[in-house]
Amino acid sequence: MSTTEYASAVAAVKTMESSLLTRSDIEQFINAPTLSELRMLLDSRTGGETLEDVWKMLSGYAPDCAELKILLYRNDFHNLKAVLKAMLSGRDPSNYYIRPSNVSLETIKEAYASKSADSLPVYMRAAAEEAYEIATRTLDGQLSDSLIDSAALTAMQQSADETGNDFIIKYAQLTTVCADIKTAYRCSVMHKSNQFMETAVCGSRELDKASLIRAALAGTESLFSFLNNTPYAEAAELLKNTPAQFEKWFDDVITEHAESARMQAFGAEPLMAYYIAKEAEIKNIRIISICRESGTDRDTITERMRKLYV
Amino acid sequence: MNSLGLALAIIGAACASLFAGIGSAKGVGLVGEAAAGVVSVDPNKFSKVLLLQLLPGTQGLYGLLTAILMLSRIGIIGGSAADLSTAQGLMFLGASLPIAIVGLFSGIAQGRAAAAGIGIVAKKPDHTIKGIIMAAMVETYAILALLVSILLIYNISI
Image (tube, rainbow over all chains, first blue to last red; front, side, top):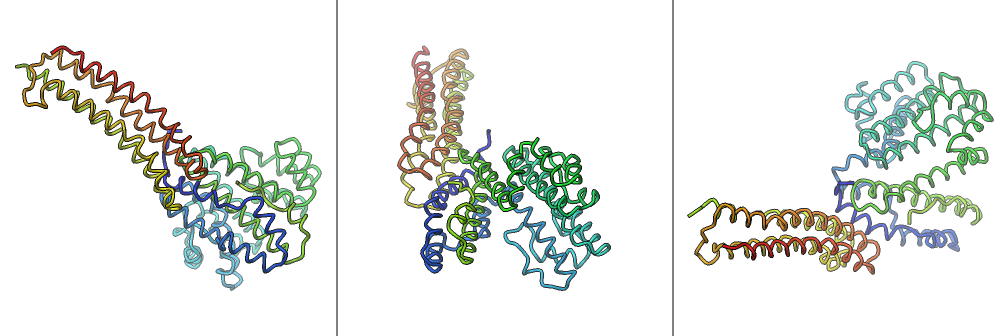
């Protein structure tokens, strides 16, 4: 690697890595005697930091780092879905808008209001137009949602390939594979048609789209036996148990992938890895808070904890 | 008086300070960027990162030293420029090349190593010395090049 890009941002991020939550912090949160003590602990340890704060910080240190944007593609497309649905049902889209995002709520609203996708980034335009067409013509909200989800993965893979960065390409591939497995499983359970699956499943170099759809069309057993012959047999086994275990597996795989960037002194990879680490950290905090509020036992909470970066 | 010989020797002195200086500037700049990143989060680490930032600066000093020795040897410093033949001028130019070339590349390489060492200061400040040692290893080659340049400058007969 000959690049020395983002030396300042990477050094800052490495300094901040030492304040990421550790296993003992998580145990302390899980074992907090009362909810109010848990809230106090969380406040003192994390200061209520959100992913938007993390994003602002990273963008401040590396404003010209275009590679980072790929991390927000799924939020962008989620927002596209949310605005489309909200506008068609006459609700306020701001309640469903996720931050951080590369595209503002106003830009998406304006694109749909003016029926022109030109103001959207190139990677979103075709999906925005097609989803609108499906949603208004066929009124099939599920199909338009699936189209947008699949388009997010396609955009992520394309942008990752354009960077030529192995770390980013692998990230996009992993994300696509996991989303595709989940989609194929759901479609199989709901006995969706081949046509629906063609729209909903994205496909990747790691997992062939046609084979996955063929297996899903033949039923869940056929899907699992197909997945057992791929590198994702472990994931299939977890999905068979509960989707929650599969979700955890996916988050852990992404964190493990992020760890591969830990030793790098330059480049976008350590910045992306830090964002991924923060994503896992914030997800853990959310799980602990929700589980403690609902009275879930401590062992179950511990089982649900995502792998930590540190 | 053969002015071409003298001109070649002066170009040699200029190369020594120019390329080694560029190497140092690039190296120090890179470490400075990384150091600023750390200090922006934890200002208490300023003294530790400063040590690492200084390391790639030595190549520029070696280039300057070589240039001064060469200018002194050919009489530019002192006011009475020597009457150098073209061959002698080329010899002085050649004598400047070790520190000019090695200074350029080792300055950049040392900058990279020291900037990576900044990561140690950031995450494990107690192990800063290891980062300094690793970056300092690059220095060896700049010192060897300086030695060769000095030996050559003093052994060219005028």
